[in-house]
Image 1 (cartoon, rainbow, N blue to C red):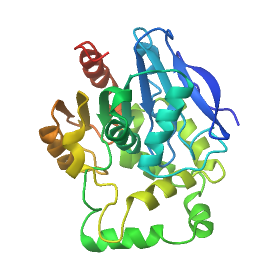
Image 2 (image 1 turned 45 degrees about the horizontal axis):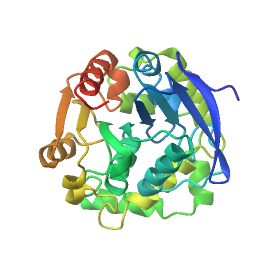
Image 3 (image 1 turned 120 degrees about the vertical axis):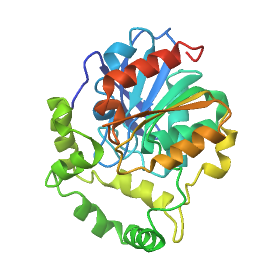
Amino acid sequence: MTRLVPPGATVAHVDLDGGRVRVLHAGDSSAPPVILAHGGSTDNAAISWYRLFEPLSETHRVIAPDLPGFGATTGIEPGGPQEQADFLLRLSERMEVGRATVCGVSMGGEAALNLALRHPESVRALVLVAPGGLVPRIGNRVAHTATWLVTRLPEQLLVPVASLGDRFVDIALKAVTNDVSTLPAPVVEEIGREARRPRSSLGYLRYHRAAIGRTGMRNHLMPHIRGVQAPTLLFRGENDSLMPLRGSREAAARMPDARLVTVPDCGHWAQLDAHERFLREVTSFLGEGHP
């Protein structure tokens, strides 16, 4: 299968954990490193960060893996947010990245938070776009319990049902963006390819199984959020219908060194929906002594 490679990026494959990780990278290897962690569903590194490689690589070493269960990474069992955080650490050590700024969107933002909590010595700063892990449950109690019950169904049933090709891609895109027409055509095409990939839903299913408990979220990080010492930029679209904004507001208020930027007329994929604003904020943040 032909996979999307963003402008300015180069593809590498790294042997890790008995499998093979596709890593998109750009920039000088001696420059300050930035690790990019993509989101869930039919996402991968090329989709979430399509617009970021070229401008960011002018000043930084950019590293963006496909997480286990996503994209072209193979042979590694996918897991929950803590396992994703530990995977990022092992990959960073394997690639000799050193202490890095970690930028994550949605599920990847939660992985970045877990990395900062579990392995603070590896994180210089955080950039979080609509991060998960900041709400106690999904909707009301009835909705949460119903969602939990669905995640308990056998994988043999859930994976084929969830992997229905690109039948629902248009619906999914409308859920994550404020204006689908602003997305680059190569990104939309890659989402379709990812949706058609066999067992493409397994990574996101395993994440949900680890994160969602019977009565509440197992991955709720708010009680621990003050332990994130790394300087943090939270970037949110005000029209995000998937991830409640209140979680990011509370996290920014509790964290020792964090600020929240909200953007009107912008959805869940704020780094794509409002790319120019996102790039300005990230460039400014990285220039404030958080290289």
